[in-house]
Length: 422
Length: 132
Image 1 (cartoon, rainbow over the protein chains, first blue to last red):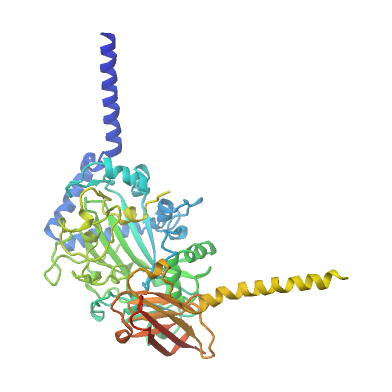
Image 2 (cartoon, rainbow over the protein chains, first blue to last red; image 1 turned 90 degrees about the vertical axis):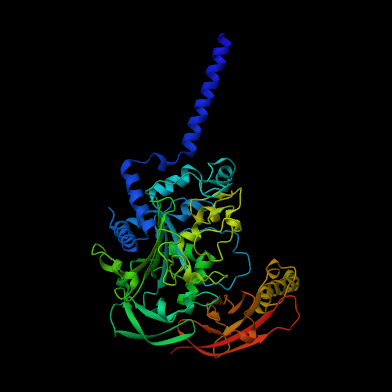
């Protein structure tokens, strides 16, 4: 009798421990989110369903105002966040610095290959504390962690036969920042995206193909126009802009060394400056892709700098709360892969010219008809090629990214593509 | 006293070897040659290669070679470049150029490799002039 009781207790204990383990490992914070967060999600879902672009834009502008507010140390909030190097650097950095100042990217194995004639730009992805802690907690930055979830994780609600990573907290934010180097002396040419002047090219519209440049002059003086050359073209009357028109940082020796050790970044520096990046140069923030996990599909927005920031449909709704250089950024938003319809009547479009403009037309349109959410919905492990651009709802039947047996990485390509293998 | 000439005699081939070793890498870098055993040569695409020089014939590092404005390669420390471009960007229908901040474009020559090769190649040599 005692033995039976002990066995029953043992079984119960094992079951309870197992249930607790499962709950801890795979509980979806969204399932148990506070009422206020749940109602916030519901109201955002309503904006998504209605395709209410004006309200969507108001929401995202307000987010930008929040993450760019000065933090306790005077830096904008987002500049204090964890950099991708902390998650994916292998080995991990010993003394990681937040933001772009902590740029750290280790060889992903492609450096030894023959260079492809791509047109890279300096990017660095930042994770706020909730997103960072979630990734660490579930080892989502490690291939072994992803592989375990691929085999034993919770079933994905949308893609039959796939599993998913545990749902991120609703207050998770991930930013992909884009920077242009500026020499401290003289004038540095910098391309500017004018939609009407850059029709879609079959091979994509990388920044070397853009029709106009400005001259960035840290001295802050001089005539309104300046003659500059860029990418084989002469611009005798480029608009001269000061460095204070951008959010910018000064490069120190450590940043310069680490950035020049990254092949794509080094190439981007040579294209822009014609020489390696060095201490004393500046980095001007020219683009940001923002993703917040306020709804299960995340809310997506692209921001890019412009020298005529009031004169665009992408400026609509910019609030007074945004001050200074932050008023010089334009914005496109996606709450949904399809809604509201684009001007051509097709699925909704939202892209960042610095990041997606270069994507070639693989049959469904180029990067100029892409949608952040439609692309990131394909993010899954093991990684697949993220091109070609797809438009609208996912093709669950034939797209390899949705094949059974895969792990959905909650719309984050960075997990699927950069997980450490150690 | 007799050791010095002996040493000198032995050091000659060593010095020659060191000099040769120093020259070999730059000689290898100097000109692109197809190597079928190189993994880089196995993939699809067209191999663009060549150099960028100034008006005096000095090779220019860190210059950009623009291929149809959609593709960019940059010159290495020896002023030479090579890299893959997507199939379809053949020499006959692809404009090429080169640039570098502080320099002006002078001329570019473009020469397709022999037809029927394992890998399609295009040699591009460019000249820039330093701005005064």
